[in-house]
Image (tube, rainbow, N blue to C red; front, top):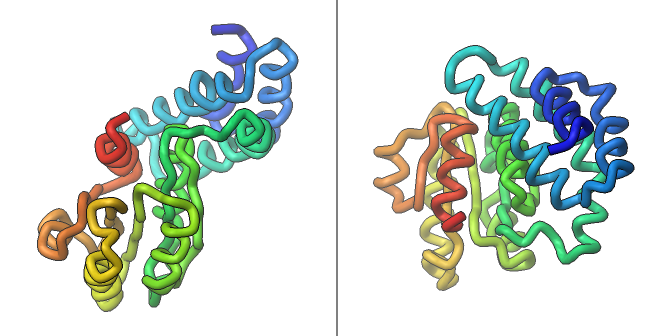
Length: 212
């Protein structure tokens, strides 16, 4: 590990958003490849943030700040990584289900999954089931990750499982559910492949589903 990489990790963990791009460039200038920067630098930084969040040393604002700092670095190296044949660890379609516009939790999960080196297609918020599935087919995604904070929109998650079955995709595409209105019992009841309480659990679940 070089001094440049250590500095980049520290910048992401402490959320120094304005310094992230320069620190990432410094790693490139020091001879680190984009894949190294993603997996040995940015991913490790988000794992540290995840541990701090789990230990209640960090709260939502700090995690969001670190996630936004992470993206400053990722925006610089991801296009180079695609030139190397992509991250290649797995593809995830993520969004908030139709009828809900609360996306802070989804954005943090996206940052954690990106930190794992996965290719993420973020469809945003208030997204119909058919759009999730169309994107999963188009990108050959292994996982659909869906969230909601509102009880009325839970029906969309149930619908997701039915449509995946109808299309012959159940099992080929794994489903992860999360958000304040969901629970493990609910996920089991609708036949989802997994549920996570927070972004740290979501990244562990994605790793498990992808066999990483």
